[in-house]
Figure (cartoon, rainbow over the protein chains, first blue to last red):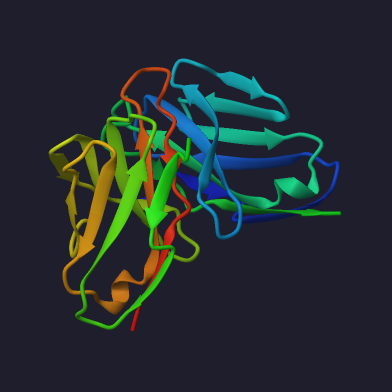
Length: 113
Length: 114
């Protein structure tokens, strides 16, 4: 079953604007990861946040995690056309990723030039 | 390094035919995974392996078998393909250490079962 559920399913913004997408999950986790998928390609890891962390930054990316609400958000600042892609959250339920990650259905982000 | 590679990139099968998808990684990762992705869906785990010679079932294992005879390779087999197995298949690998939980994905294999 899908652990993470992203919101919105699709998002279209102008280049230069910020994009925010959210993820909700159901069970307790060890960490939550965000991945990007360009059309027809494999997934690329963006950022990982652990269950004891509340916020993390990487370049133009900012991720927050609220374990009490079982939710996370990904903020992309100053968006670029190259950011057009699908974004997935994935949870690691048991730690170490030994038995795989559980992915949400993704948010399809379109950056209008 | 090539990272994670998958063979073939695209395949068309008729119902009942069999095939094997090959995944290879050159990062010396212990863990390897097979996922499938259907339209509008995230990835779902089919089978995974935590080391050479070991495999385990994931969320959607029915109709698939796997083998990990060599550390760098993870094979996914379809013994009798069904239209419901039309999907994009992704292989991934990772290193079993805290701080290195990132999964590295291959480019995918598109499978169409007629």
